[in-house]
Length: 222
Image 1 (cartoon, rainbow, N blue to C red):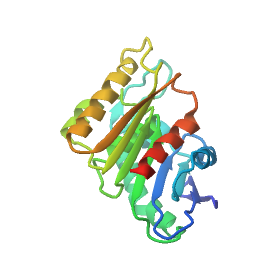
Image 2: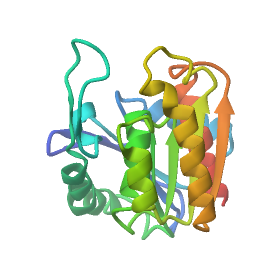
Image 3: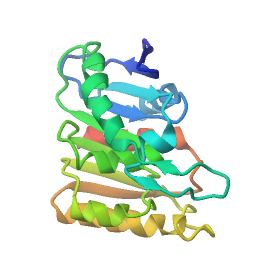
């Protein structure tokens, strides 16, 4: 793994061992790419390359359109996802591909929380990523359910998961996360996308690396 800085963001690449190994791109809140890679090894994941990006402006880069803050005192969401996706496809992918053992058989997009929201949204905006995984995705985001049903993602397969306690909140917006996630997953299945939904024990912050690895493992096994 050789991390490098690209336009102010830190990119960590774990190349696959064989030419043609699939490549999974993972947007991270901190620098937990190494933890996810270790959990993937525990699961015996098939050979793949993992590209983890950190140093994001979390509530700007991953939010599809502006929205108010969900808690008092927090900054509103700035809606910079389109700009960030353009950076991923235009700058990140060429830089990462140069470090891989060969052209990947396919490229996937994965993420947790806001990065999980971004992954589902981005899969309807580009055909670069053929598989996706949204772990505890912020699919409570205002308007996302309606948007996705009007602009459906078109990957070959798409994984969803949530913690069992995530919808048990007094915030009425965030309380809709399980209902929205199940509805979006069912809609994707109706579009012919291979998809699954996993409900994990615990809240949003439990076993995040292991949950992320499980979603990536599912993608790799399809």
